[in-house]
Amino acid sequence: QDFATKDSHLLTSRQFMVGAGFLLVTLLTLLPASGHLVGGGRHPASRIRAPGARADGAAAAPTFESKLRHFAPAADLPALRTEAARLENDLQSAVEEQDFAAAAMLRDDISQLRQKDPAFLASNLRERLEALVRRESYGEAATTRDQLLVLRRFQPQYQLAGLWKGNYPNHGEATIKIHYEGDTLVAVKVTGDEHVPAGETTFRADLTTPYQEPAAVEAVEEDLVGVRVEVVSVGSDGSEQREVERYHGEGRVAARGFQHAHYVPGQLILVEPDTIGFLWQQMGIFVVFNREQDGPGEMMIEQRAVDA
Image 1 (cartoon, rainbow, N blue to C red):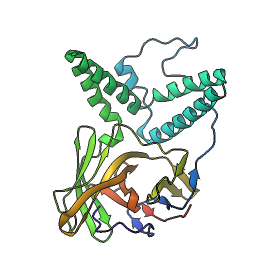
Image 2 (cartoon, rainbow, N blue to C red):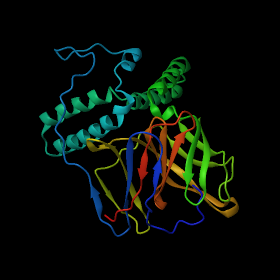
Image 3 (tube, one colour):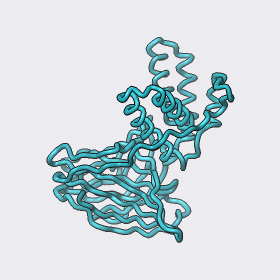
Image 4 (cartoon, rainbow, N blue to C red):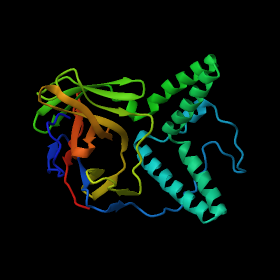
């Protein structure tokens, strides 16, 4: 993002119209004096049988190819990760309470959910790759590297390369080009402005681990502004909150003439296959980008600040 100053702690309400159907993206801002946001309570463990498991609990060791067949659809991954995170909180509580029977059941439920998440398998493969390289087992390392590349087909965050168009506050419409440097997404400006010129990076994000919002968010520093993003689908039957994928990132800010350019904490948010957003977190600025191709469905993005 290209902003000369970052002294405002308030968000302004804005709307973006794009195609058929509506979405609301709400930014809830925690100002320094606000307390905390509390998420949902404990959820009961889900009793889900792992893919390929037999009724007696035994299962053959799955191959890499068989694991690919059991992944959840991309649209279901954010909700799956949220459920897994809640079960992990329940597991920690069960262990602290020495309820080991419940802890064992929760552990199994978490394991079953993770089998459906390509990001979890990718994390394990990265650890395996590092260990193989340390042991100089380069043949196995090459196979593991190739498996990581195959896994990208099942992870939406690796399907974003190309041109995108967004509307920057105070600068108007701009085009960016997204490419990858390893597991880092890099967005470079095609349309420049007086703060960040064309050819410079406007934001970047680490795609290795999806961001999971904690159950409670507290302002820990006097000058820190925390932002929680909510995406809500709006239809004729009412509205429903949606889980979306998000990743830690950094957004660039600069003074006029690209002076004092630096990065600030941010977050990449995958709203829809052809719509993403990037949040300059400390500034409370959220920019929506649409893929440059046949237009996505109509969307309304609304931002508002709420004192917690």
